[in-house]
Image (cartoon, rainbow, N blue to C red; front, top):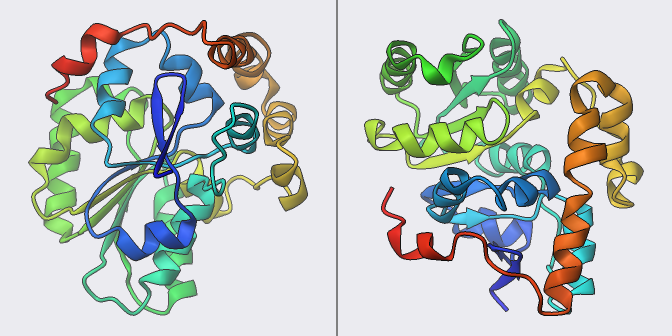
Length: 257
């Protein structure tokens, strides 16, 4: 089975090696519980998601749910696992030139330095940390696009949080003709810079990364993890018993972003 449907999203049933071997161009999103909940109520986000070329399972909970629904996904592939695998896989490929967009001031540049030192070449050609609320400032967005184009980047990794990063990629990707691969990577740039620590591997493997993140940033994340995301399990139960109704069925034929 090449795709697994969870709620209104078709998730690609691929291993990380499958993706690395075949990804030569396209847009990569990594759906997790928070994305899947937001995709039930944000039609613009849904339209953007429909245009992605790859949708990779970024949650052990979603991985377990796929088994509960009888359509098991091969592997959890989080953005923070995929991105380092991607640049290591392409360490000797001179056509891969990465631009990092995200993080607080100075964070993306720090990530650039650390990745290039690790790889042993300038695989990250430039990096930029945008201002708060940049996505609604058209002039700043166009300046960022110009900076990316001037860098010669062929890969753009955007880590500014969801759904902002996914919407920004789809809105501006046609303005960047040299960029072949677009990656929505969430907090990955912070991790690569050493600005934030990742949860221990065992926490991720048992599907408790949400609790680790909640305890590390309770004021910012309490509503997401304690109020919004539990709705996911109600939606999944409805799907299991064939009671789930797609909220934006009229949009599938209209997606032309």
